[in-house]
Length: 466
Length: 92
Image (cartoon, each protein chain N blue to C red):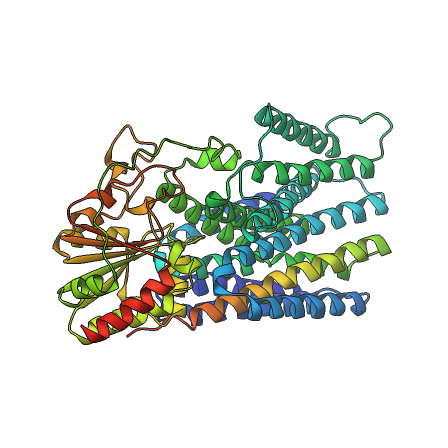
């Protein structure tokens, strides 16, 4: 029997395990096993590749694998859960960069052999290096914004879109030139390719800098999708089906998450892909001031919560910033001991990436069967005694039902339909959307001002004594 | 059918299968899904290994080793951090 057939079968096993692994991610009970299966699939593919190819020199390969594993492993162990978006961003940069390098190395190899390049090969090399390079620099910029190394504000300049479009066309023209569509005056193919890569790297930067820091969850999801496409293109370059299949899986995953995020943030996919949103800063006039709010302290809040039958918590990113997840969980456990029915309502953009808040609460030992997403819980609010909003604002703003509002149509948690609502917040200042929140002035709303962590500890003490 | 076309068939069908599987992942698991998918995109390491194995010049060798290192950061870091997150998800 032909040996290459055996290897092809091994790659098929690997590809199947990737799909089965992702399928196990459909439930928190099996998810950990699913991730392990995907890791096993990767191991099988790596070993098969090393056995199948006659390795000329092991030194470089082993050093690369050891160094990469060490860095990745250390980073994975040390990262804080609040910093997950950055971590995913930078891992993504490396994945995209690796795909671009594979395409580049194959290009250099073919050039040095002096062999003519088939159109299909040059097309996949061009696509792989273009998408990979865009992912590489784009993810680094996103990382910089999330980590606070670069200002979170959108960076814009006149004719930005036109300039980006021209750059993209130039990259396409150079790519076509590489595949031999036309002669490029005395330039060597390597020079053309270098310019091509340079333009692609620049494009990655330019596509992400005009996007504001708070919109990064969408960008990270989209770049994740790109890194999958880049890997698939690299699969076409080296003619390996496992790369094509896994690349397609990641591309699909990234796209689905991007669409989910766009819906939750009320953005269009086209805007994100072409880097033209979040630009116009909505410095809408906040017409607060005169309207009265009802302000309460920890003791009063504890009374309201302790004598309720049902409580729904709406955690926002302010909770994570204040690191008050553990205190929140303690308060809720005390309420449960008193027989109060407690649930958590998680808006899709409650954190800094899709599902981020769920991870932060899981870290604070909140059981996942207490967490409900927007569609699951929105009908429950009208039967809820007390909603406790912690560090969230725009995602509970009833203004989204007003067609004239800047946040019109944004999906919100309908907390204003509950009997009572306690809003824990530093001040009445507007959220990211820059508009006032009518929720704060409703009859059933009580404002509990202060730092989330301090307020939450006070609340824990008062509930215990209530 | 050329190898390229077969590859395209595989790509499209895998993307469709992936969408079916992934769209059923609940929002609670979206962050681990993303970091897990991210780790899978490190599959580029296979390409990097193939290139490195056949490297005919120092230039190609260097590009290959850098690609292997970057992809392995993605793979090992991605799977480990996903596991770290998933082990925190507990039922009451």
